[in-house]
Image (cartoon, rainbow, N blue to C red; front, side, top):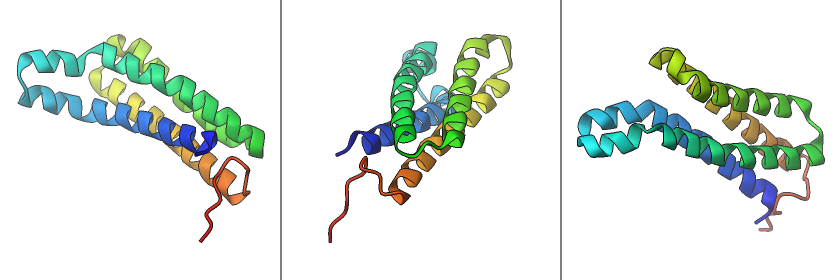
Length: 134
């Protein structure tokens, strides 16, 4: 499997995991034992997901840009990553709802970026995608 395809899929997955964690962690805390709740809501989880998302996203975006030079995809990705980082850094000083909204917005922007990156590359028949032979 080509690295562009793989990195876009991983970046989409990490962003989706981040969004799902932020949406459902409060519900899981209510339904779970307190020791499990502490691990689910830990800021360490947010940081770990973000630390995985950033390098994979940058790698995928840069590979796509080399193939199709689409600036809007880069801008969307950088904006999404910036919002995700900001949500983590200022999360303690804003309301939980504001942090949730920022995280969802940033995640959706990163997902959109990688989805567009993948589709533009595929449409242009870049060498970064496998060819499907029937």
